[in-house]
Image 1 (cartoon, rainbow, N blue to C red):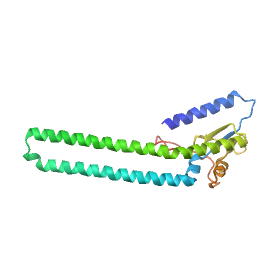
Image 2 (image 1 turned 120 degrees about the horizontal axis):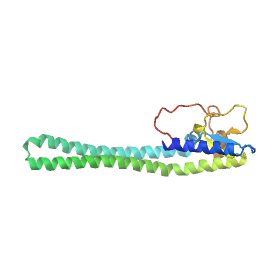
Image 3 (image 1 turned 90 degrees about the vertical axis):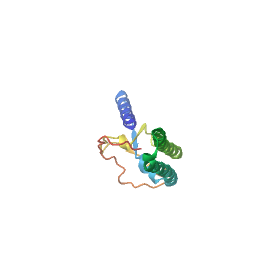
Length: 193
């Protein structure tokens, strides 16, 4: 949702600037950042590190869940033999342990997301620097993500796909075909980077 709002705000800003200064031709660049990112050698390392971290966290969570299940099964076996006060105390302990398990899962998810941001930050900064360099070299006034681009006239010189140029600036290769924007419809699915 936030990404959609950011994209809309960016489009309104670009549109407003284009209409505000019609006397001066403005050059817009667009780039497929995701295509470039996934072709960066460092990206594979980041993904491997994240996968290892996710597996480690999943194993720890599974161990905690197994401990909870064992306690629950023990309680269920002994339930008929326990006094009401002991039953109430054990049920309270089981509820607390279940809540802690849910909190632990949420915390692990947050930690993994934070770790992803930390690992991706240098790549995104490197990508942004390359976009800035290419934009300066080609006298581009604005750069938008390909995903935010709704339409580009085929015979225009005011909108330029700089994906391949940015990739070259980073010393990587990306396929030249398929970098053109393709229409897409988001039916309310999840936001993707």
